[in-house]
Image (cartoon, rainbow, N blue to C red; front, side):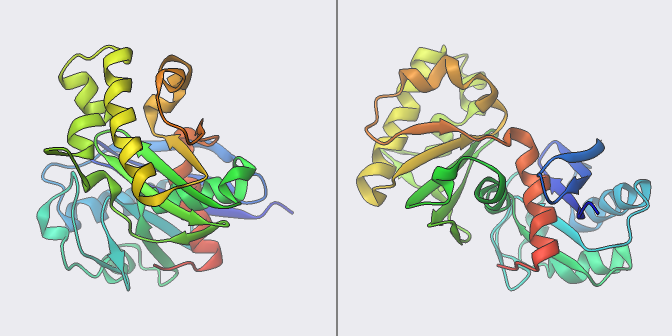
Length: 250
């Protein structure tokens, strides 16, 4: 019997959901993506989440990622979504809209970290690993021998005069029309600062731009090994489904 879970990944541009084979980390069938409503208020986003769950006729536990710090199922920040998320009881919000009490909500990068530990490179399970999801911003998940230290916000750490994600996100690369060579120099600057302070055993890079890791990872000047995440853009949904199945709540 296939162990099946369900995950939803809320982002600044899209809300994505899929059934997940919890034994392999693969999707069961296609995912569904719906554009994130604007403004991305809690109520508006929760309605989209409910639409996705209904589409799949799913009635079991639901894992949901949000681009926010989540402690005791309360959102304490809001990145690329409406500021009204701050101090929202996210478990209560989604339980109401889904008519489902089996809901776990967690930070999107933390979910990706859980997925990589379970299904990705073995180096995510040993030593001090830092997973970074590089996209509109830079999300982070710190992993100690495969155990998550939740709600780190390394993308907001100052590197020089700017926050790391203002300097080296893939959005910054596009916005400033940087070549891979010039952008990799910025990423190296950020990673060198993380390395100086945290001394990880490996950096794992995810997000959409990790699909082209061969174009920029070899250009990085950092002593710590840098490897692409194996689950790529599946990681948020898969990690959310895993968190719901195992009742992992930050």
